[in-house]
Image 1 (cartoon, rainbow, N blue to C red):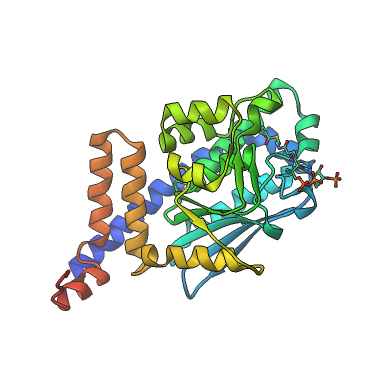
Image 2: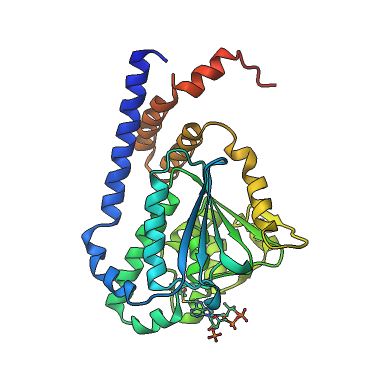
Length: 300
Ligand SMILES: CC[C@H](C(=O)O)C(=O)SCCNC(=O)CCNC(=O)[C@H](O)C(C)(C)COP(=O)(O)OP(=O)(O)OC[C@H]1O[C@@H](n2cnc3c(N)ncnc32)[C@H](O)[C@@H]1OP(=O)(O)O
């Protein structure tokens, strides 16, 4: 790369990281401060992050198996922290979100829900989780929810914050909110409408319907059904295999692809075009581009 090209590349990367930090500081702002202390008062379980440096695929695991991976208050804080780590993982390509011990997530931990069952705390918790899941949605990594067992309530909402949903053949996603006298509050309704359309979203939410993998696939909620014959870890192997073709190539290019899709998904056209130009500026003339040009490619 020329000196000029390298400087331009560094400048564009710096600009994008700056935009990213602005989003980070906005979403972890002071309006959610009070709720952090409250959430800390409901411990249990953890959210673990394993970055696999050779493949660039991170595993984000909800780990509270005694409560079917219900999200305790401290796990909500953990989740935010792990996402912060992923936002700056420049060598990363993808993240797989999964639950421990063969099940995805049974939603909020009901003992915390009972203790903060007043509108003020509920709204604060909801704002905190909306911000956190928006960060997941906007990660510069391709995200996959690997749904084994059950994804209920807030767990179902979490799946909609990923780019793709893979389900094992016996898994169920269920927005149980209506049965709890609630509606989704973690952004799950807004995202669901965008994924499956308003008619299907209305059916799933008003009926609190159990979505099996085939129904999910017909509606466009589920991208692939995994048929696992045996063995712990098989679903994860299949999910990594499924991801393979999508994450081939240099990490900066995969991240650039995700960024232009996020801006196309979220921004009005003029702003999306502007962002697309600035992301384009980070890959044009960058090492992967120059290497590809040197190879005289033929796309047969
Ligand atoms: C609605 C939105 C809301 C939000 O915050 O926005 C929520 O997400 S509220 C939570 C909605 N989820 C539920 O109501 C889940 C209720 N639980 C179940 O339906 C079942 O427990 C199930 C299907 C997850 C698992 O059934 P299974 O037969 O496999 O196991 P158990 O029922 O024996 O459960 C084992 C153990 O886990 C405890 N558990 C399960 N889910 C939760 C939860 N969300 N919070 C706290 N604890 C949970 C369950 O009580 C059992 O505990 P034990 O002490 O062994 O009785």
